Amino acid sequence: MTNLIDRMLEPSFYPHPVTTVRLVQTHISYVFLTGTRAYKVKKPVNFGFLDFSTLAKRQFFCAEELRLNQRLAPDLYEMVLPITETDGAYQLDGTGTVVEYALRMREFSQDCLFSNLFVRGEVTLAHMEQLGQQMARFYREAAVNDHIRSFGDPAVARQPIDDNYQQTERYIGVAQTREQFTQTKAFTDQIFQEQADLLQARVAGDRFRECHGDLHLGNICLLDQPVVFDCIEFNEPFRFIDVLSDIGFLVMDLVARERPDLANRFLNTCLEWTGDWAGLPLLPLYLSYRAYVRAKVTSFLLDDPGIGAEQKAQAQTQAANYYRLAWQFTQPQTPKLYVMQGLSGSGKSTVARELALRTQAIHLRSDAVRKHLAGHPLTEKLSTEFYTAEFSQKTYQQMADLAERLLKNGFSVILDAKYDRQVQRGPILALAEELGVTVRILACRCREEVLRTRLEARTGDIADADASLIAAQQQAQEDFSEAEADRVLFLNTQAPIVWDLLP
Image (cartoon, rainbow, N blue to C red):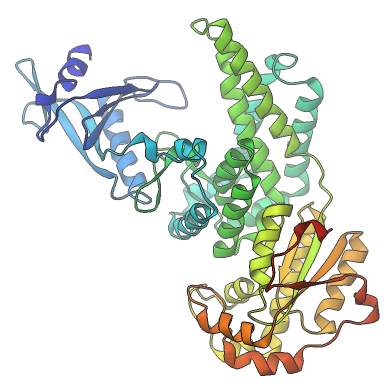
């Protein structure tokens, strides 16, 4: 293959103008950067979990990589081209004997990678919202069939997790403690036992799909918008997974980089647009698993004789950090409950979104819950039949049910709805008391003319309410009872919120 590599380093090999060619290698690929196009050639390797050992397999996986990545990055992944040989001369897309295959992609600057943008402090909450909506659409359309569902069988789903523990026992006392290892593994066993019904429901509800499999900042670039690329093509168990496990990889990556706010915005956006809150009791398992995989892979560097002492010391520190993070995701949390209250346009959702970032809470917005219950897209305005007293009660009950499930599993929750009547607030306060959870009602207030201005200016939001509803909502809103009074904090949303005052 050396002769081919040398030839592909020559600008004249390519059918378009090329000044210089730069080669980037990974353990499985050669990537030739020509300025406008990148050409990836797979190495003839077999690592067990990955097998590119024959030309036919490399052709197949080139085609798979193209197919799978065109789902999220159609403008980046262009085509698979044969490399031919005639009398010792190599040609791209020629007529001779096919000796290799190359995947042609649009080249982009490495400065556009989110991993590099992050270092420069340029990854924003807006990017996370864009990614969350993009991935929600992706999961909705991702393939699902009986073969993919089979990977949700508990014995199959937990195999890679169990393998991680077996493969890392030798690093106890080196990169993690015995206590961390024991507690992290015990949590896994507990989840698979206690959440067995939920795991089955995930499969039955088609939450196991053909996902990306490797969703982290290094596989996202910023072009006109965030673009996710380089999904797993070579291993089905890495790709046929619970969508929450896929989401969890990026959440974990951001938490590991000490940006839980970005992680929370991405997670809450994904959940709002998928309506997949019910699966959240499994998220700590997936977060721990993703961190543990990073720890394991980094630990393997400690056994590499080709790595120097300084690099091994860095690897040991990094692995220890990931092992600690994997353990932290398994530890019990003390949840809190926040109930937003106020008229449409009073700023409830704006406050709730910021509060979620500060508390790492799950934000349940009634506008989204209602539309998921109705089976309608979030961008579609609902007809009046979905705003009857009966359907509104169904919406509030669904929010209460989700809050109970999440609080019991250690998630802080923000319930974002009008909650303008005591009959709506009463069950929520009773639930908090039953569970021993701290609850605070955040009553958002502003002048009527501000309400009207906000509602008239509202665009691109999932809420349907407009200014015509102000009078009716004002009339329907009930005062707080004496029993509620000590739990209410009034917020003037026309002024900056003093967040330190919130418990």
